[in-house]
Structures are given as C-alpha cells and as structure tokens.
Image (cartoon, rainbow, N blue to C red; front, top):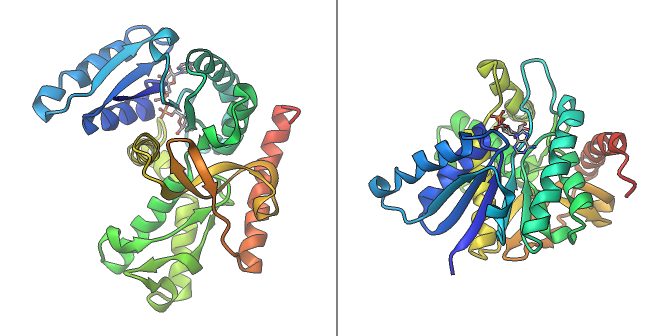
Length: 310
Ligand code: APR
C-alpha cells in the first residue's frame, strides 16, 4: 500500500517538502493552500518532473481538504514566515489563527493521521495542534530539533573540514534562542567534540546555531529558511511512513519526562508508524538540565498567551 502525505501551505517550505517527498517516488502527495491555483500549478509542475526523475509518486495541488482524506501523515506549514528583525515568537497571533483552522480541517478528513507541525513559533503551534486535534500525544510532532541539529552539524563539519556524515549531535529544547545544543553528546567519528575543538570555538558555533534561522532571515530579507527545514520535515515523514524507528530530536508533548509537564519541548524520540513511539530520556548534567528548563519556560510563556486551557 502506498503511503499518503498531505502538506498544508504551498509556500516556500510546503512546496519544498512536496518536491522532496515526490522525488522519493513511492507515495501519494497532496499540496493544499488557500491561494487558488498556486498549489495546483506547483503540484502539476512537480508532477511533470517525475518522468525525467523516474519517480512514480502522485502529486496533487488543491484548495479542498476532501483531497487530503485518509492521509497517513499531514505536514502543517501554513502561516507567515519571519521578516528581518522579527523573532519566531512575533508570529504567534497570526499563525495561531491559521494553524487552528488548518488543524480542524485536517482532523475532519484524516482522523488517524500523524500531524507534523512546521509553522512557527514551533513549540506553541504544536501545542495548539494537539489541543485542537484532541489526538493522543504520539500523533502530534513538532519539527525543530532535526533542523537545529543539522545546522549545528553543518557548522562543526565546516570548522573541522570533515564530512557532515561523521558529525553526530543533539540540539534539544524549544525552537528559539534558548535551544540547547548538547555539546557533551556531540561527536565526530565517535570522538567527543571537546577533544577536537577549543571551548571558545564550540561556544561560537553553539551561538551561531542558536541564531541559525535568524542568520538566513537577515540574508533573504523577504522570508525564512526552507531548504533545510523541508529536508528535516521529510526525514521525519519518512521515518513514520516506512516505520523506520529512527531516533531523532523532535518537539514532543512532555508529561513529566525531563521534569517538564504539559508542554512541547525538543527531546530525542523514536519515530515509527505510530508517530512518537518513545520519548527517550537521557541523563543531563545539571547545567544542561537548567538550560532545558529555561528553554521550556520560554515555550510556556507563549503557550500561556494562547490561553488554551490545557
Ligand atoms: N490554509 C492554508 N494555507 C495557508 C493558510 C491557511 N489558512 N494561511 C496561509 N497559508 C499559506 C499561504 O498562502 C502561503 O502559501 O501558507 C503559505 C506560507 O508560505 P510562505 O509565506 O512561503 O512561508 P514559508 O517560508 O513556507 O513558511 C511557512 O513555516 O518555517 C515556518 O516560520 C515559517 O511559519 C512559517 C511557515
């Protein structure tokens, strides 16, 4: 049976997600937006690339949620992106209304799907999607840690002039300036990073990672990153569709894990056909735990503004 994935929002992130998914060649993909013609046009254009690329995916652009019916996975990218000088948190009120409506619609047609939230501010939007969908927590996932970790790995590989494939790392916490790159769990070819780089260099890279999204917003001036965010989203989708059981950092609704309750925060999770099949608790050093709590507190501030009553 072919998997079905629907992507809501046909802008930079959504269209890139669909392109990457379509090129996998083995699933049915739907691209939905409120703009008339845009998802249809982009979908048709991508479909016409398939004979050249040799992929048998179907790609359909639409404005009608009925076309998303019975999706295995729904990726929510609808919303406005940041402009220079804005933080992700500045998007809260606008994207809150968008994500609420989108979630109501996707749930109506795909009551058994796994939802991956990409819209920002990420952790708060994931919390909203969980609240509105009333899904069990394993079926609502926020995409952030895979992206933040990829940024961290990129900068480390550049610094050391080594293959990105050999750099393993973890970035936990909220998807914002308080995110927590876990230096202690970062290795290059199995060697701890602290044996390879001086502390000042690691600190500089950690700081650049924290501001990784902002660096791109400042360069683009008219929007935010989408190539790496779409690649990160697709890695999560594939782990679910193919039941791969990958261990990846994602925003998950914590119910006491890491001493945090009732909040989405980035932690390592096992991803399979049921979505988040396990939240993995790693032992943190006191300063790492404090940084994670601080990050959770900033997520809570935003969640409180939404007054969800959960
Ligand atoms: N339903 C469906 N689509 C919507 C809705 C809605 N209610 N509201 C807006 N959209 C669509 C817009 O029409 C637009 O095509 O969402 C798309 C957003 O695309 P972009 O403006 O290109 O933004 P993008 O860069 O894709 O970012 C989307 O992902 O990474 C996050 O911070 C980013 O929140 C932002 C989101």
